[in-house]
Amino acid sequence: MNAKTELLSPRQTVGERPMPVLLRLLTILALVGFCFTLFLGLFVAGRDIQQGEIQRIFYIHMPSFFGAFTAFGLTVVGGILYLWRKSEQWDRIALAGVEVGLAFALINLVTGAIWARPIWNTWWTWDPRLTSAAIMALTYAAYLMLRAGIEDEARKRSFMAVYGIFAFTSVLVTLFIIRVVPETIHPVIVGASPQNAQGSFEATSGVVTALIPSLLLWLTVMPITLIWHRARIERRLEAINRLKMRILSE
Amino acid sequence: MRSILTLLSLAAILIFASVVLAQNDPDTVPYIRLSSFNAPLLEGWENQSGDDFAQFHYAQAHATIRSALLEIAEPVAAAAADLRRSFGIEVGAPIYQGKVNLADGTWTVLIYEPDGLASASVMARRAGSQTAVISFVESDPEARILMLTIAQSRDGRDDAGTEIDLAVSLLASNKAADLAEAAALSLPSGEWTGVVGDSFLAMGMVFGNDSYLAIGEGAAENLAKLADAYNRTVLGFFVTPDNSGYLALALTAVFAILALLILSFSWRSRNIQKDLQLIESLNQAGS
Image (cartoon, rainbow over all chains, first blue to last red; front, side, top):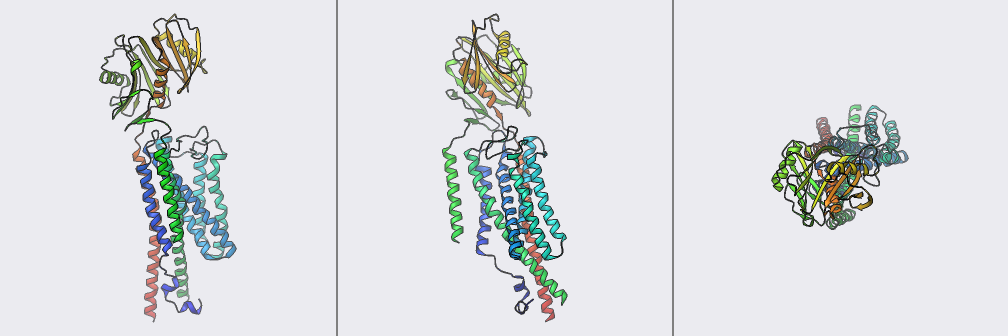
């Protein structure tokens, strides 16, 4: 603690700053966008004549995976920049990316399982895409558990940066596995479906109308907004922990 | 601020473009969509559909194709009830009754000839507590047209020749007719085999493990059009499942996971505030 910070109040030390205007705008955009895309998916897109109402969950199921992709991608960026610059702010972004990405990955898994029950007549099957998605979620859950188990701060940040970079392979495997392994029943929306894909449907204009805005929202605004909020909390949490340690040591 | 405005403008343009595209681009499959089921629209046929049934009439051939869901659990009873209510036809025992397994379930295939002037070819299957009924009814005094769907026999995988022979032996008036001429027919529903006999025309198409057949006697020059329309109706008919409960469950899960994430943010922020207040109060007490 230098002389300058000793003069600051605890609140100033922790860095109680007002929410940036851009973050406020992003938060509003995320909330409005979430409601709007939900409206498009539930009321503007037509009902799938074969799958019924449950098909509408596709407008969240697929975008949530891409939201996880963005979040886990930011973990990679944060990890690389932390290892390069050794700046804690990149480690915070990496951690926030994992938490937000894991929530999105869970949304993707749970909505997929609920969709599968009426369409495939089962909640779960060990299909390559489903299995890799589950492994991806478990890989990032392990990130959080490992992080909580390492006490040395510098060692923890470096180790988790490397882990976060390598964990991204599970995301890429999940993304591309249905292109590589033809033994899948998971529908392929972009490009040709394998012969045995089940529950697929044609992307008609109604689907596109609901899907594109939802995809844009979940791919960009939602993960970035949530990661930004989470990283700000982490910065304050670290600062207050340091303050507590200083008080305890005095 | 400028970047946000640019982002918002781009999003607005994309949404507008998507909505315009949705309005200008018709659905890839022309369907009549009712609350509980869907049936293909038959071009060139008079659409007589109502709120809970799809019905198309082709006046030139005195033919009607009707699809409906009835609150009757038993397929044969449902078929008879639909013919009675919709066409005023009282049917007795069918001249043909069989079962066929299609992708959406087991259908009962029935053919009735109640008065010699009209014939009704019906397919019916259970759909939950209801029964889906697809009827082809013709009342052309100059023709006799029957539609039949039967499972493929073992030696007739590539074409419907074996099943055409079987259908003719079962249903044609002149069973000893000579099946001399066969020809391939390409229709919107697929590739058909047509057979011209002494006193009848017969057509058949293989789809999946089943053969779709049509037999016409007398002035049956519209047989191909009728067979194609009935086949498209049978293969295109979908009962839309009522799974809105699963959608509600999935949306609840989405809200719950997002709420947990946001609540965890809020909980951690509140803890930081509490710690700050405690440290501030300790500072004040110390000073």
